[in-house]
Length: 531
Image 1 (cartoon, rainbow, N blue to C red):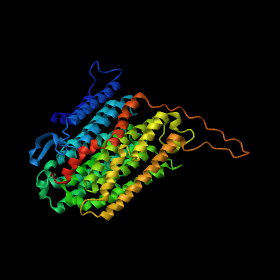
Image 2: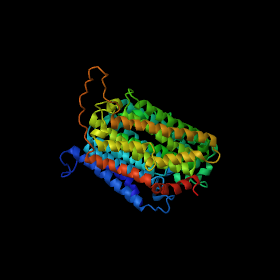
Image 3: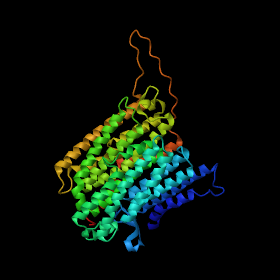
């Protein structure tokens, strides 16, 4: 098991190096570009198989215990160790990362984004996967920071070199926001390590371990510093403004990975570091975190409603990016409740958002390839998409993704948001119940606004938002517009890349215990100080 986890983290790095080398004779295929894209599919496929094998061998009877652990001294003078392991909290995120990266590599094999050499593209994709997997697998604060930072450069280049309009500005905004947040986070991590004498996350999570040496003031300063860095990546309102630009400019696979796994690194850090290691500081800041989360839910929904209205020239990719601000608000609200119910809901919502929003970004990218636009007014015009009539399977799957995103019961999006609101209904002892009830009501209003804008998106894109102009009695008939070009329905490679996400969205909605059975014991132990 420990070798499997080490392989999951290291194989993408080795694959990234190999992608830059010339293809061996006999493996070049039709051309070198095809060979390196096939290499990306192969490496990410092997990593996915290893992650699934890791999940199959995971001891579900003890999901709160760290399993598949590796613990090797790395820098003794600084007490930094190469410490890897997974429990019921991190394992689902490892599998989700491996799955989404494989589907992105598979999709890119058939639909490579416009830009420079595929060699660089595949190599950056694999480095991005390695950094994300390491973030969820490492158990040392300094290694966590290094892995957290490792994803910035590949994502910057994916946006700046293979993105669309405004890609340079969006890439710079992404890296500046996240780098500044990370610098502040590093100060908080160093403060914990210096004051406790260790960077080991498992030891720090126990009440009778090094955490006992952290005073209330130290915990306050550490949570404030670490929380800023994690909130930028989450993204929490008002530190979210880099996200819509990055999503709008990024290539399809960049948007899928950014929404599907990179945003989860921030919320995972709150659960793995802030809650167990600095509980007193987290308790002080929890009401403020919950307030920002509730504002983010409402803000994201109102921004989407503004984009979807007639004549707003709203961009569908930008709309889904703003919807992520709202959905991740539910995750932060669940974490801020500091209850097992709320934190379990946050972890479930993390996975659900990765599946559903990953599917939506795949489909919006494909829609842009078909129609040349993601402008909602253009897609809703009389010569727009009207997917139900022109590409019914595509329209049906897009409607399914929208319905799943609005949190309808029976699909994955429902359980996380419901449990997060239940956590806010009865927050941890010492937290103001009146304040959290207010946040819960705002979150409930956000679900209604979410349903409103997503149903409008379905109506406008799938049905066509405008009817043909009608002539008044006695007037000349209004000439019809030129018929729009044919929109191809779902292709075979798109079925292969999208079907797993749709199937898992249904399975997680119908059988939530499969995920909650893993996370709940680990959350109980984490919040209980290791007991």
